[in-house]
Amino acid sequence: MSKFTENPPLEIRLGERLRLAREMAGFTQGEAAQTLGITSPALSQYESAKRRIEALTLDRIARLYGVPVTYFFTDVTTSTQLSEQQDWETSLRTLGNSLSITGKTGIAKLIQQIHDLEELYQLTKTTFPGKPHPPFAALPKEEYTDYEVAEFAQKARRYYNLGVAPLLNIKGFLDAQGYQVFATPLGQDRTDLSGLFFLHPNLGSVVVFNEDQAYTRSPFTLSHEIAHSLFHWDRPAILCRDLEGANSLEKFANRFASYFLIPQEGLQERLEVMGIRTVKHPEEVIHIARYFGVSYQGAIYRLAADRKLGAPPEALTHNIKPIALAKSLGYSPSTCEFGVRPLPPEERLPRIFLELGYGAIAKKILSLRRVAEMLRISDLELEDRLSEEDAEDFEEVYA
Image (cartoon, rainbow, N blue to C red):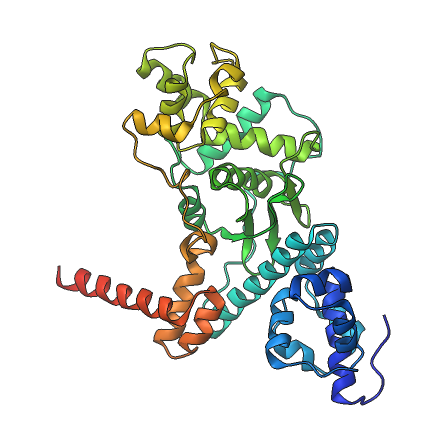
């Protein structure tokens, strides 16, 4: 990449920064133009300073590339900018270069939200959590037996004092453990990412799940990322896909997630309560899935791993509608089956993100509009949320 000429005109600097931001985000001119809804020649003219860019378009470009608008007016050289980019961001952008347009857009959005969270920590003078001390040694990239993976999952449950109880709110659990959990749109194809994990130098463990994929997958995906955070933390970043023929790290994390959500002893106890040794009917799968808070398909996968299926998997899935069957058995719709779209901030952002955002408004550090922008909701919705928060505080004080 070329460096800036000495004291070039503002239009030239802006165009150069537009090009650099696009390249760092991994977009070709055609991909960026398509996402922005403009022509490639128009974007090329913006980058070569041959066409004036409107403020609204510049804001949309900044959001797409995952940079603040002020980035385009920073007077630094390309080499300086690249050297100042943090390792975690470089890793995400580099790994994201091979993703679809939606995936690249999601990675850029994630990077911007992480920067927003860092800003909230700094402005509110809240101490960063920092990198956690790994409770287990990092595992080498090799194959493990189902028995070994089950042992690792059991160790993790013991570490978190979970016993064999169901873990019905995996997002809440991760928030409580200090994980930074984000949901971001990464695409709906099977080749798109299901999630990712990396260690942030200030924020600690960051796990992400694909907001575009079936909501029923989120508990499994988050548990999958827990495996990476506990046993693969020495990697710069791990991008995860739900594909056949996955590498050994992904195979390990998939099996870990299954055993972590449905521990062996817990499954055996549940079958004994149900008075059965193996599962032969769809209704029994529903009972298992609802008890452990997993999807119907996830329950079948786990039962098969422990050889607890008394019927072929296809006999339990052919023409079966789990939601309708669960309703007929008296179960109310679960969040795992009927997730609200788009996801509310509580489900797509770390809990600390909302707490610091609300605190920044209360202390008049940031405007309501700026925090609403960070949370990606409207000003009116944020006003309603703050009113509800005030009402709850009033009830707690005078209850």
